[in-house]
Length: 137
Image (cartoon, rainbow, N blue to C red; front, side, top):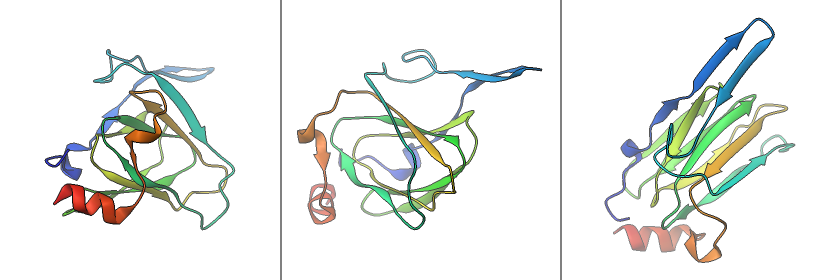
């Protein structure tokens, strides 16, 4: 986890199938993702000005997708920071273990879809930034 870098978190294009009746994007674990999907959740109805996230994971990887609307993801590896704007449902942000993340600047009606490599495990979370910085140094 100490060697993880924000530069290892990349935007992945997702397979978009266009049809006159609308589009469909299919994501399959261990096929278009480097992990098997063990958990799916989504964030919605986020009030203006609110932020989500504010934690890191020890072992869990995630693909974060703006299923609707847009939002920013702040990535922090303890030395470098970068902000990624997500605003297309056919692209996802791959976030690796050991990266602090904060989701913010949600547009009205935004839906944040998250595909996770592991089931929920409270022990996997690093919820205090000071602890994160200590682990990363």
